[in-house]
Image (cartoon, rainbow, N blue to C red; front, side, top):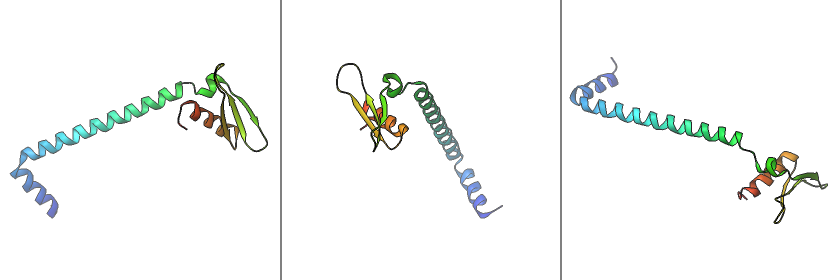
Length: 102
């Protein structure tokens, strides 16, 4: 046995309750990590199934010669304008503004 194994064996022999505490802590930490992973997976799934604002409100998409523009909004209130160097970037900018992330 290695020196480390001998030290660990001596510690376990002297304090067996410590091993139980370590095992319980590891089990709890594993359960927490598994819960976080499941929660994250569920959040991703919910986001994938939710319609993005540009899918719900269908803004006009055009190129103004400099940027791609996604422009639109609800029937009442000011229009939102998303800009980007490609259509996807303009739509992403529109979504961020709609969701108040910008």
